[in-house]
Every structure is written in structure tokens, then in C-alpha cells.
Image (cartoon, rainbow, N blue to C red):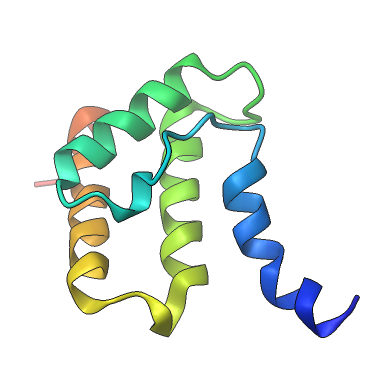
Amino acid sequence: MTDKSKSNWSSKVTRESHALDLEQGLFTWNDPKEIASSLKRSADSSRHRKTEPFRSAMSMLVFYINRAGRNLPNDQKRILEQAKHELRKLYGRESV
């Protein structure tokens, strides 16, 4: 694997994942509820996922946050972290 392909594999996974059909620019949106709703729609309708919808949606969100790392602006990271809470609410997984 070349240095360039090593650094781009995660963006390729995000773009070309067959597990979920993600809306264009999903992780750049400013509304955590909309991000969570879109992920839920994608996970619920996917026929290619290997696990339950909640886990597929959360995995894709966490994957993106982790792979964007220090290149992710703090404001966007905060929005994506809030989207994790919204996703838990949508699936009835929010703990008290």
C-alpha cells in the first residue's frame, strides 16, 4: 500500500460503503437531529448491513468522527457528538 492509499482508505470507505447509502455531505450538516434521522433512514432501509440498524448507523458515525480526527473542526465534532445522542434517542437507546 502506498502512503497516499493508506491516507485515503477511510474516505473511500465513507464514500463507497455499501452497508449504508449515505446522503451527500451528511457529516458536514449543522443539525444533529437531521444527521441522526438521515443515518436512521439509511440503516433501516439498508439490505447490506451485517448487524442491527442502530449499530450500523452508530458505527458509521463513530467511524467518521474517529477517522476525521484532528482535521475535524471543533464545532463540527460537537455537532457529530450531539448526533450520537440524537441517534440513541431515535432508537430508544438513550439512558437516563
